[in-house]
Amino acid sequence: MYAVAQLTLVVTRLGHGLGWDESVYVSQYDPRNPAVFFSAPRSRGTSLLTAPFVAADAGPLALRAVLAVLSAAALYAAFRVWRPLVGARTTAFAALLFGSLWISVLSGAMAMPNLWVAFGAVGAVGWFLRGGRGEPWAWAKAALCVAAVALFRAPDAVWLVLPLAGYALLVRGYRRALPWLAAGLAAGLAQWVVEAYLRWGGILERLHVSSATEGDMGLHLNLGTAWRAVNGPLLCRPCTAGAPDQPGLALWWLALPLLAVAAVLVARRDKRLAPTALPVLCAAALSASYLLLIGYSAPRFLLPSYALLALPVAVLLRRLKRRRPLAVAAVVLVALQLVSQFIVLHRVVASTAATDAQYVAAAHGLRTLGLTPPCLVTGPRALPIGYAAGCASAQVEGNNTSTTRAGLLRRAAEVPTAVLTPRGAHPPHYARDWTPYVLPGTHGWTAWKAPEPKALRLVGRP
Image (cartoon, rainbow, N blue to C red; front, side, top):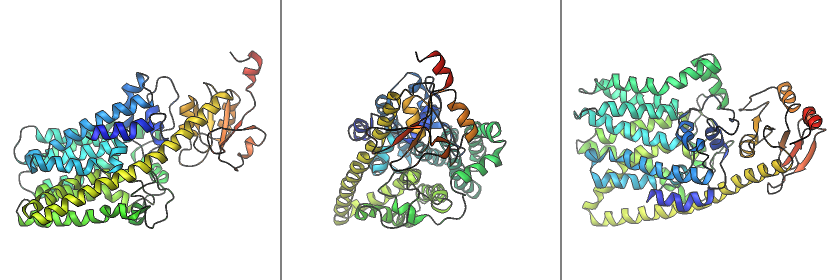
């Protein structure tokens, strides 16, 4: 059902192009096009996941279809870990609650890391608990899940391991899990650490650059911003706190922590606290950095927390079957939730498709202007548009600064170069005498093309 929802509602409408962050991840191991600048907060898991398909020259449509199938398999594998802990039907219900969220359906077919962190977190906590029951190799499998989380989002792996390690220290019989957790975390973080030294000079230096890129991480009470982004946009930066679009369709977000607390209280009374409390603790830890330490939000940030909370909430709601009126009310509410998520998904997919179409149109316009590889694009939105056009991209300011003004101008003297500006905006001072061209299908985006490089003027274009 999860795969079919993605293939019919997402893949068919987003198969023409890639978004901004997707272009960054997918480009890293593309053998045919220049890699987009990879900033310090990012991790390589998504790039590694998509690398085989990019190497096989899979276009956006094929790539999204493959990701939809892979994410559906991952959903099944991650939640199936919990069958011995909460039962088969409750596990399936939890997967339904999580997989039916609009951001879960949309993210499955997108080259983004947060959904894969969610699957890894669900698997890690499940195997951790099964290891406490004495199952062979359960803690080794938990370590593999932790390593996978670290590959996709290094900081998230640390937040995930903290409550697991604390639980292992406090609860008798779990201390033998500590070496496995440490090994999984070290294995997953190895690539991130090596890259930190190669590109930034060390771990602390990378963390400092990451903080600056994220807007100076510190104490930010970000609950209002997260609430504003529940129904989109995909990135709320900047974002003014307030009610989200169609706030009635976001009431589940306010109810979720209340249901989680109720699930813990019921589990405590039933003396089955661990399978409920530990997912709630890990969900809280994984959401902490996004709700307390940054000043912007995106719906995908909380996917790992949603996935973990789906399990205790499913256990709680399944208990209502003992009382028929409550059971009927729960079924009605779940059905309304499914409908509301479809409404939000339809709107956000349409908006995302329109944005991606502008990137593709801009890339086509650049090619008609003679910007063919090797070429260079700079300015706002240059990263996804440049990658779609087969050009390198560079920025001289902002979160994705990758060169200096002098370096950019030297490159512009060697290859066809253009600066992109939105409608009504002026180009940078160094490009004031470049030739402007309005790009069709982009709502007024303008490409300011640099003078033809001297080498091309002498030998002529092929």
